[in-house]
Image (cartoon, rainbow, N blue to C red; front, side, top):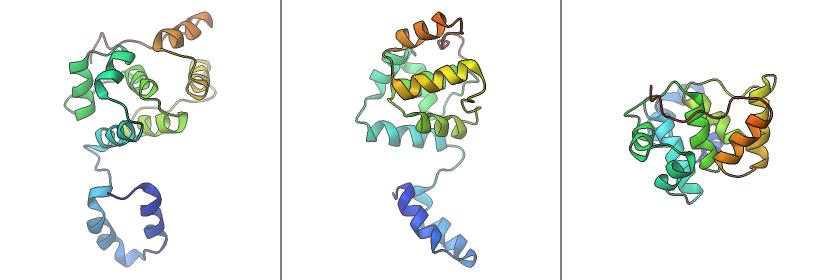
Length: 151
């Protein structure tokens, strides 16, 4: 499996007539829509040397539900659940934005006050989810919702 920079090097030298060849030769390194989020999360979690069950514990997401989300068996419409997973997976802001894009959710947007606060949080890592929610509450913003309503 090639990483993004390796793929980009090959793409820089790939002629449009060789597009099909590139796609078939690198199929195992490319995200398909159905498994893109799962594959991205697995790759990043592995890179960071984390365990999924620890991420679910820190994110306050039931382990069984977390596994279903990461396997693609379940989907959520709650962006806060994905943000919790990303934060507790030690994702950078850039990695989080990419995870949101892949999951087809709106990225954090700097002009929205709560999103701006979350961007600061991802950049400065103030502590646990409890501390993140405290930071938001102190600024009269909605805390990151739990996965209690699993839709």
